[in-house]
Length: 205
Image 1 (spheres, rainbow, N blue to C red):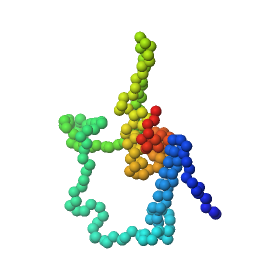
Image 2: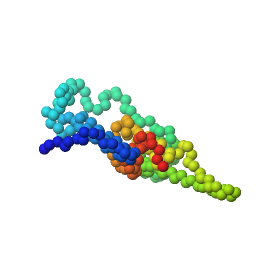
Image 3: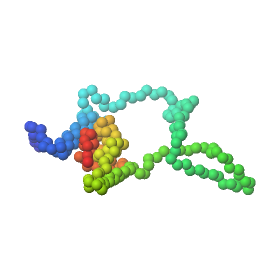
Protein backbone atom coordinates (compact mmCIF):
# COMPACT_ATOMS: atom_id res chain seq x y z
CA UNK A 1 0.00 0.00 0.00
CA UNK A 2 1.58 3.33 -1.01
CA UNK A 3 2.39 5.73 1.79
CA UNK A 4 0.39 8.91 2.09
CA UNK A 5 2.28 11.77 0.53
CA UNK A 6 2.98 14.58 2.96
CA UNK A 7 2.48 18.20 1.84
CA UNK A 8 5.69 19.88 0.72
CA UNK A 9 4.85 23.14 2.51
CA UNK A 10 3.64 23.55 6.11
CA UNK A 11 0.08 24.82 6.59
CA UNK A 12 -0.32 28.52 7.28
CA UNK A 13 -2.69 29.76 9.99
CA UNK A 14 -4.68 32.84 9.06
CA UNK A 15 -5.96 33.65 12.55
CA UNK A 16 -5.36 32.86 16.22
CA UNK A 17 -7.93 30.05 16.40
CA UNK A 18 -6.38 28.28 13.41
CA UNK A 19 -2.93 28.70 14.93
CA UNK A 20 -4.03 27.19 18.25
CA UNK A 21 -5.68 24.27 16.48
CA UNK A 22 -2.55 23.68 14.38
CA UNK A 23 -0.33 23.76 17.47
CA UNK A 24 -2.65 21.30 19.22
CA UNK A 25 -2.62 18.90 16.26
CA UNK A 26 1.17 19.01 15.90
CA UNK A 27 1.63 18.59 19.66
CA UNK A 28 -0.56 15.47 19.69
CA UNK A 29 1.34 14.03 16.73
CA UNK A 30 4.69 14.74 18.40
CA UNK A 31 3.62 12.95 21.58
CA UNK A 32 2.34 10.00 19.55
CA UNK A 33 5.63 9.70 17.65
CA UNK A 34 7.64 9.92 20.89
CA UNK A 35 5.51 7.17 22.44
CA UNK A 36 6.15 4.94 19.41
CA UNK A 37 9.86 5.70 19.48
CA UNK A 38 10.13 4.66 23.13
CA UNK A 39 8.35 1.34 22.61
CA UNK A 40 10.25 -1.94 22.80
CA UNK A 41 9.53 -5.60 23.56
CA UNK A 42 9.56 -4.96 27.32
CA UNK A 43 6.94 -2.19 27.47
CA UNK A 44 4.70 -3.20 24.55
CA UNK A 45 3.51 -6.21 22.55
CA UNK A 46 6.32 -5.83 20.02
CA UNK A 47 8.61 -8.86 19.53
CA UNK A 48 12.21 -8.76 20.84
CA UNK A 49 13.48 -8.72 17.26
CA UNK A 50 12.05 -5.21 16.87
CA UNK A 51 14.32 -3.79 19.58
CA UNK A 52 16.95 -1.37 18.41
CA UNK A 53 20.71 -2.06 18.47
CA UNK A 54 22.09 -2.43 21.97
CA UNK A 55 18.69 -2.94 23.58
CA UNK A 56 18.62 -5.59 26.25
CA UNK A 57 16.11 -8.37 25.59
CA UNK A 58 15.64 -9.16 29.25
CA UNK A 59 16.36 -7.63 32.63
CA UNK A 60 19.69 -8.62 34.20
CA UNK A 61 19.33 -11.47 36.66
CA UNK A 62 19.82 -10.56 40.30
CA UNK A 63 22.20 -12.59 42.41
CA UNK A 64 20.50 -14.45 45.29
CA UNK A 65 21.22 -12.88 48.67
CA UNK A 66 19.89 -15.69 50.85
CA UNK A 67 17.58 -13.30 52.69
CA UNK A 68 13.83 -13.69 52.97
CA UNK A 69 11.48 -11.34 51.20
CA UNK A 70 10.04 -8.36 53.03
CA UNK A 71 11.37 -6.43 56.00
CA UNK A 72 14.48 -7.89 57.56
CA UNK A 73 14.95 -8.71 61.22
CA UNK A 74 15.81 -5.60 63.24
CA UNK A 75 14.40 -3.24 60.61
CA UNK A 76 12.39 -0.39 62.12
CA UNK A 77 9.08 0.12 60.38
CA UNK A 78 8.11 3.57 59.16
CA UNK A 79 4.75 5.23 59.69
CA UNK A 80 3.19 8.33 58.22
CA UNK A 81 3.38 11.20 60.69
CA UNK A 82 0.05 12.43 62.00
CA UNK A 83 -1.13 15.73 60.56
CA UNK A 84 -1.34 18.65 62.97
CA UNK A 85 -4.45 20.09 61.30
CA UNK A 86 -7.46 17.95 60.40
CA UNK A 87 -10.72 18.85 58.64
CA UNK A 88 -12.98 16.67 60.76
CA UNK A 89 -12.66 14.73 64.01
CA UNK A 90 -14.84 11.75 64.86
CA UNK A 91 -14.74 10.42 68.41
CA UNK A 92 -15.60 6.87 69.47
CA UNK A 93 -16.27 5.62 73.00
CA UNK A 94 -16.62 2.10 74.37
CA UNK A 95 -19.75 0.91 76.15
CA UNK A 96 -20.14 2.40 79.61
CA UNK A 97 -20.87 -1.03 81.10
CA UNK A 98 -18.37 -3.89 81.21
CA UNK A 99 -19.28 -7.49 80.38
CA UNK A 100 -18.98 -8.28 84.09
CA UNK A 101 -21.62 -5.67 84.91
CA UNK A 102 -19.28 -3.03 86.29
CA UNK A 103 -19.27 0.64 85.25
CA UNK A 104 -16.52 1.76 82.89
CA UNK A 105 -14.81 5.09 83.51
CA UNK A 106 -14.01 6.70 80.16
CA UNK A 107 -10.65 8.46 79.82
CA UNK A 108 -10.55 12.07 78.65
CA UNK A 109 -7.82 11.57 76.03
CA UNK A 110 -7.87 8.94 73.24
CA UNK A 111 -5.53 5.99 73.50
CA UNK A 112 -5.13 5.93 69.71
CA UNK A 113 -5.38 8.47 66.89
CA UNK A 114 -6.08 7.11 63.44
CA UNK A 115 -6.03 9.51 60.47
CA UNK A 116 -7.40 8.74 57.01
CA UNK A 117 -6.29 10.87 54.06
CA UNK A 118 -8.69 11.18 51.15
CA UNK A 119 -9.38 13.30 48.08
CA UNK A 120 -12.35 15.65 48.55
CA UNK A 121 -15.47 14.74 46.60
CA UNK A 122 -15.90 18.36 45.47
CA UNK A 123 -13.30 18.47 42.75
CA UNK A 124 -13.52 22.17 41.93
CA UNK A 125 -15.03 25.42 43.15
CA UNK A 126 -16.67 28.20 41.17
CA UNK A 127 -16.46 31.85 42.20
CA UNK A 128 -18.83 34.22 40.41
CA UNK A 129 -17.76 37.84 40.19
CA UNK A 130 -20.74 40.15 39.67
CA UNK A 131 -19.90 43.58 38.30
CA UNK A 132 -22.45 46.33 38.87
CA UNK A 133 -22.88 49.68 37.21
CA UNK A 134 -24.41 52.98 38.23
CA UNK A 135 -25.49 56.26 36.73
CA UNK A 136 -24.49 59.73 37.85
CA UNK A 137 -27.46 61.78 39.07
CA UNK A 138 -25.89 64.97 37.75
CA UNK A 139 -24.39 64.19 34.34
CA UNK A 140 -26.11 60.83 33.68
CA UNK A 141 -22.74 59.18 33.05
CA UNK A 142 -22.71 55.40 33.41
CA UNK A 143 -19.98 54.14 35.73
CA UNK A 144 -19.08 50.43 35.70
CA UNK A 145 -17.16 48.39 38.24
CA UNK A 146 -14.07 46.52 37.04
CA UNK A 147 -12.51 43.26 38.10
CA UNK A 148 -9.72 43.55 40.69
CA UNK A 149 -6.18 42.99 39.47
CA UNK A 150 -5.90 39.70 41.38
CA UNK A 151 -8.85 38.14 39.50
CA UNK A 152 -8.02 36.32 36.27
CA UNK A 153 -9.72 37.65 33.17
CA UNK A 154 -10.18 34.11 31.87
CA UNK A 155 -12.27 31.30 33.31
CA UNK A 156 -9.34 29.41 34.81
CA UNK A 157 -8.19 30.21 38.33
CA UNK A 158 -4.59 30.17 39.52
CA UNK A 159 -4.67 26.58 40.80
CA UNK A 160 -6.24 25.30 37.59
CA UNK A 161 -3.70 27.19 35.48
CA UNK A 162 -0.90 25.71 37.59
CA UNK A 163 -2.34 22.21 37.03
CA UNK A 164 -2.49 22.71 33.26
CA UNK A 165 1.07 24.10 33.24
CA UNK A 166 2.35 21.13 35.26
CA UNK A 167 0.66 18.56 33.01
CA UNK A 168 1.97 20.28 29.90
CA UNK A 169 5.46 21.29 31.00
CA UNK A 170 6.51 18.64 33.52
CA UNK A 171 4.61 15.59 32.27
CA UNK A 172 4.49 16.57 28.56
CA UNK A 173 0.79 15.82 28.23
CA UNK A 174 -0.95 16.78 25.01
CA UNK A 175 -3.91 19.16 24.96
CA UNK A 176 -6.27 16.24 24.29
CA UNK A 177 -4.97 14.31 27.31
CA UNK A 178 -5.19 17.39 29.54
CA UNK A 179 -8.75 17.89 28.34
CA UNK A 180 -9.57 14.27 29.23
CA UNK A 181 -7.95 14.56 32.67
CA UNK A 182 -9.90 17.70 33.52
CA UNK A 183 -13.13 15.93 32.58
CA UNK A 184 -12.37 12.61 34.31
CA UNK A 185 -10.69 13.90 37.47
CA UNK A 186 -12.52 17.15 38.10
CA UNK A 187 -15.66 17.12 35.95
CA UNK A 188 -14.49 20.24 34.10
CA UNK A 189 -15.17 20.70 30.40
CA UNK A 190 -12.84 23.10 28.60
CA UNK A 191 -12.32 23.34 24.86
CA UNK A 192 -8.96 22.58 23.29
CA UNK A 193 -8.67 26.24 22.33
CA UNK A 194 -9.19 27.38 25.94
CA UNK A 195 -6.49 24.99 27.17
CA UNK A 196 -4.15 26.09 24.39
CA UNK A 197 -4.68 29.75 25.31
CA UNK A 198 -4.06 28.94 28.96
CA UNK A 199 -0.77 27.30 28.00
CA UNK A 200 0.24 30.30 25.94
CA UNK A 201 -0.69 32.71 28.72
CA UNK A 202 -3.23 34.53 26.57
CA UNK A 203 -5.96 36.61 28.18
CA UNK A 204 -9.56 35.53 27.67
CA UNK A 205 -12.64 37.55 28.26
